[in-house]
Length: 155
Image (cartoon, rainbow, N blue to C red):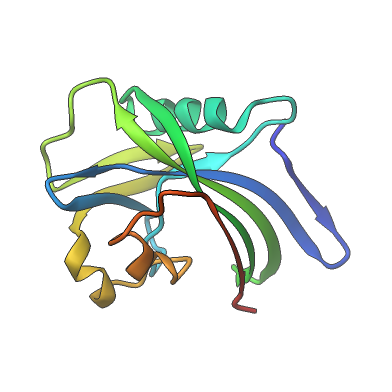
């Protein structure tokens, strides 16, 4: 069971995301039809370690094997999406690719019947892209040495 539940005030979500970089580019993804891009990842299951969840989600969605590394950010994110209010706790990790790197600039993944679009973006061009949460536009250009705690309220 995923660590997500609905209350009278909205939806709570425990999410993990990974930062995978290569050649000064970062891998982002979005669900088909969404106007914004995000770091790939997914929901943590109850009783699952967050790093294991990231590795599982990446393999399920892309077929690639990755290793979750050090944690970069712990993010409390408050936002509205598809008519619902979310309170999301997110752990953002560095990722290392174990299987061969996808050479295509853009490729597709799958998540429970929804088409996912993955794309490599030059890090220096992220200011021109709608990335959620927005702090990533600048933060991905200078990854921290120590984990940071970030609170975002975009409601």
